[in-house]
Length: 333
Length: 290
Image (tube, rainbow over all chains, first blue to last red; front, side, top):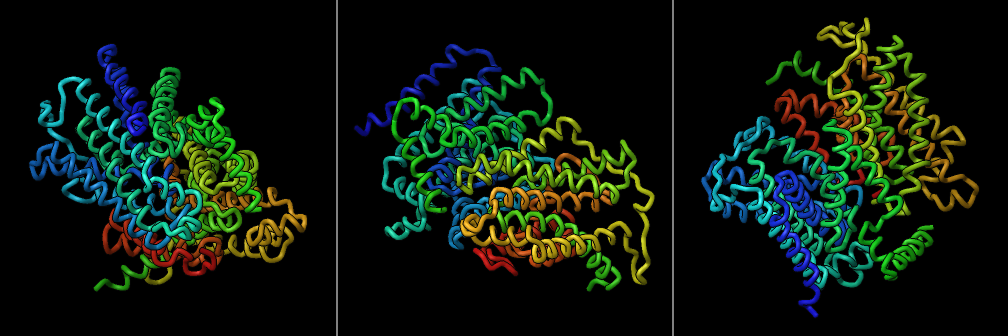
């Protein structure tokens, strides 16, 4: 039973691992790498937003902290990039725990939580802009040294396997979470925090674990970004772009599901590339498209593509959630 | 210690900037008070209004203050349509969805603006842009003084609207108890859209007052929207007095923060205020609702 639960993950990962044998075009590999990167970032958001129901509008704060941590550790302290990656994950988790401890201790929910994460991302951006060790506004360059021991690879396939391993790890973690008591607690808090507390769930601790895990996972995406592009600046690392990307991917794919972010990322970036071919490299158009997609998804498919799949399969889940919505609306009314 | 001749102008400038913040925040707080949502598209709508004022001036030679009578009704209509046509239909009764929808609207408006108008910084030339009045120890910019006064006029008008008209009564009823309002025959959907429209009209007014001394780029809204959030949270979500006082306070914090800490770090002052208020007093100075 347990192993069976992980079979789809193994199959998907195995299938994706075979791709570089077929795909040799650097353009396509680059596309796959970025798609997996955003699936990883989206999964991080999904744990906090999709499972625990806390919508962050500033996930770039974790992404950027992971990226800056790995870059500065390598450059200023000469730490080996593999070690730096592990430390950067810890930094991401720590930033998550700090923001979580503050905002959850003071019972911030809904809009307020979204606002405070946004504010933290801005504060970190300004700090990265002014501090010396981050290279300030001109950014930071990781020296080129293409050795696997250095977490840099000669060809794109190396990076592809690295990001695939990270993404597969995030899938396994999410599945384990879904099957665990902790995951069930998160869902209970998402559905109704007051009832969850009444049932004896320590909502503060559960949310704290969720944001710490989410922070570390988003930091992993940041680390990969830093190693892949070898350049960071405050606008990239802490900009609103990655915060939006992080929430869009699971919303499109299906919040609170294991494969939602991965599917969402493939769809989002597939559409993005396809339209880029049509419109050229016009600035802004792809983000405008993201906005439109976000609205269309919320309007017609609030449960995401996974929800659609469940509907098609005739699983009553969708109907039940709709019924729950209707009941809730009736209750609100 | 700093001399008064440096401190006093900083204080006055901070208050004048703060008045514009207050105006933007008034719209945001109205929308929050009634719809219980934070409108993430507020900054984008401000930017759109600024471009409206800009093009009216550049293409038709209309003075920004005259543009008030065009831009304000136009933005009111847009706000009304956005709420009625998109936001209300997409919420499915969940507040998180509304947050995300307004974020989506902001992304669309901002990036289409970036696409059509590029990220150039644009300004308009008005003959009075650099007029100043001598107040003894320093000079004050006339257009900014006008904006300062106008912010209070708009706040006063809003107060009159809310307290003296049927529409205002209906808005307050919906804000307090939407189900009860529905029962007594108020068209709640219409009131939601009216509130969103009036909130958007506030940023349009702010845009007309701002442009004589400011610039417009597709990203300009971001700078204001976070400040407006801060003001609203500081003043208390849904409180008009709070938005006014909060706006002036944040203007002061920014101006004095810039003076003592330098431009970039001065911005941090605002966010620190924001985070501190969110944490320690999320109901704000004048708020009564959590």
